[in-house]
Image 1 (cartoon, rainbow, N blue to C red):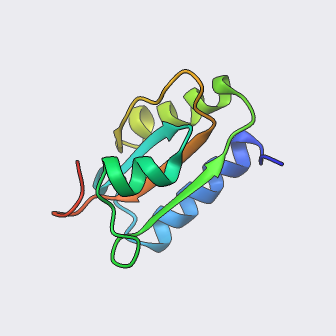
Image 2 (cartoon, rainbow, N blue to C red):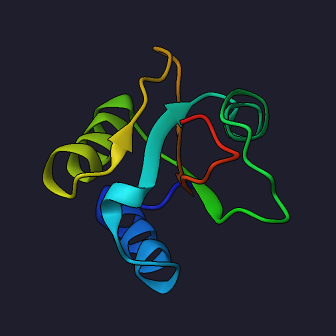
Length: 98
């Protein structure tokens, strides 16, 4: 079962705070397949980079979560597909795209 929008925002904020805390150093996006997006598209190294994802109940909540982190908190954002149900976050590094 998916967590609420507020719970997911709190999870991501805590994760970023615990792993660096500077929101502009992070990327937040939406995807149907978060593992593919993180590992293949963004080149996240699961052993070296900090990352996480959560399942979101509705596309409206997903949009709100991504918008919160990109517009209010200053994270980099990526656009997901229409059928996206996952929000992911990773700390950008020289290895990642972006």
